[in-house]
View 1: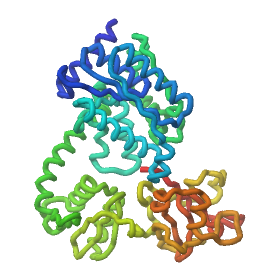
View 2 (view 1 turned 60 degrees about the horizontal axis):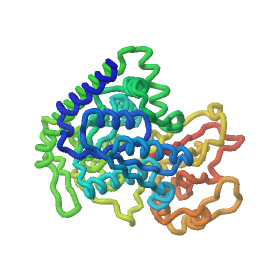
View 3 (view 1 turned 30 degrees about the vertical axis):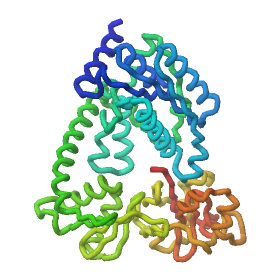
View 4 (view 1 turned 180 degrees about the vertical axis):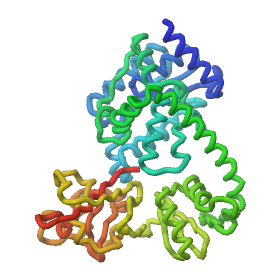
Length: 451
């Protein structure tokens, strides 16, 4: 069939031109059972490459997860290739580490893939991402706020990880599967608009494609040009970093005065802090403002690092368990980063609130009861609040025990304060004193999302 030969030819050409792997390599294919990874397995077999199959069962979708596992194992055995399967207790891992489902699942699977490579001699790990995934990542990062690096989508080769389907799109992959009767499974969670990626895929991109029928082709070119620009910046920054960053143990000092006056200072600082330490754009903007204001001692946080303004320099060090990670929330703050989460702030009139039942990750607060700046920090022993719907007060420690919160999650628990009063045990319970009442006119809506 012409379409099938075309996709297979393009697959082999793309792999060769981008030097992703050769016929001498042993390839570990990561196969979920979805159409993308099942087609990748078919193409890899048809092209005559040596490969094995790894399947992760995260046990998050009950019977669906088990049926995915059965399909992948059956097809791997039909092709006569090695099959590896691992069942993860993802929920227990989330409780142990305090990570989001996405972060826990990602860490677990990539750790296992690396172990398989080391144990069984696989040289590359092949993932079935394609151009649509890269375009979706572009919009997700843009909506969350990012620099140029976040707009370059998904790369086709990072370390041992390769993505040999980045030359094609979701439609062609699906058409190939149908034409060649390749069995695959539909993940029901892909239809849920609970996740930002699905909102972009199901809601945003179809509207853009309606406006611009050649949307995918145009975006592929845009992402390619942005990637080339980022490659140039990365190469240039490697030279700049040698003159700007001094390291002593795990303390890194960014000598701001060593940045050449002909360069955009704030951009250079952003590139260093985002690429080396994972700081977000909003945080870097606030840090640069603090440098301009000579605010020595101001502290700014990434997930694992804290940056301190020190007499015009920036001192970066690891976040310790004893660090409160306290940040100020001004009235005009758009978002704040707390550990592995981001909080989004929106002010609105009470008339725009349709329901009060929005889940634990959303707080609806009477804005007129707040004293600014608000503060975000880790909870302390002795902290107390008045849980929503209760008249008495309760220690945070007792509340977390009652909720059977793990030790790891406790260490990552943040609270939002107005003055000395706790407003919200972030992601868990609002304080009754700050809840919306019949007299409320203005509302502060805070949405917690995982990074």
